[in-house]
View 1: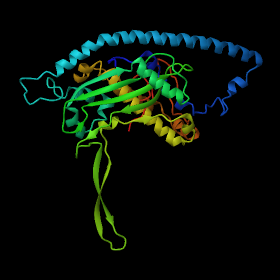
View 2: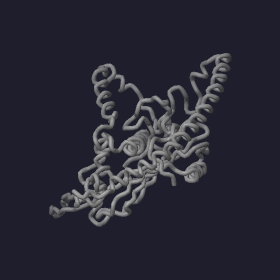
View 3: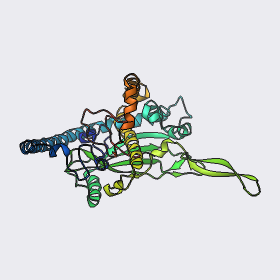
View 4: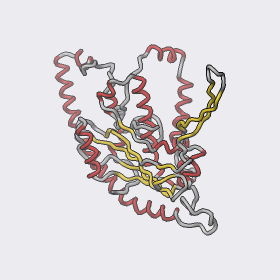
Length: 370
């Protein structure tokens, strides 16, 4: 298992993580049979030119795939160089502080270091509830590991059996590792969240297929992902009331450790637009959280702790809201009613310089978050 805690492979940065979901979209320029209305409207001579252009595009895509793989190899080389620095960082944080003998868990040298790193990030801070904080103070280290070639082969083999095109290249899947000190809340002390991605030979970029998480074994009365609520029931006949308690879901950072499967194309076709839209939101949010931790918190931890890191999402959100207020006219509002919602669950390719959909990374992948 390789420990590689820095930036993601280049092809994951191309924002094509969930193309299979996009397959359920019926594009306005095509029909359900996959025919392109624009192409059908062209003359024979024009179609011949388009066919030649498509051949050139295919050659370009092949070169770009080769570029991605070479860039990944370079990135992986530097991941190996980063690893000793991350190990030294962990060693520094685990040192006992003689001036603070009560700090004996988590990161004694700088108590609650990782929790405070995450709270400085606008995306992650929204996940952390007050009841999560005593638990997160036990967090010793956060790291990222890219799958070995053998592990990636297993992911691709599984997807190949399900009809997904066999992947061509490099490890894309990764796991986030959260190491906790022994604590009164749960076991095990190592929690892992895996993101399984494949690279299709038919497409440029990576595709998210599933996530897998460590099952948290909460100690009695310590599960912060659940809460007990009381409600009154009245008997219709006797008119007497009684108080009933029930356990319901509770907002918590630890809901992040949830397994998700991206449905097959056949399953997606049976889902309503509303279900598809909800799935897209869950997928995007979950993957965005993972990439934020992978690409921002892990490599730049001390800058986040000090509040010096560039939380560009907060700026982008504010800027976008101002733009909407300034530019949205009454006509724009009216026009929304006339448009049919587009059924799109898998994010399409927006290019290396594309805008972010939602969250802290430059990616618009779609993964699930409870």
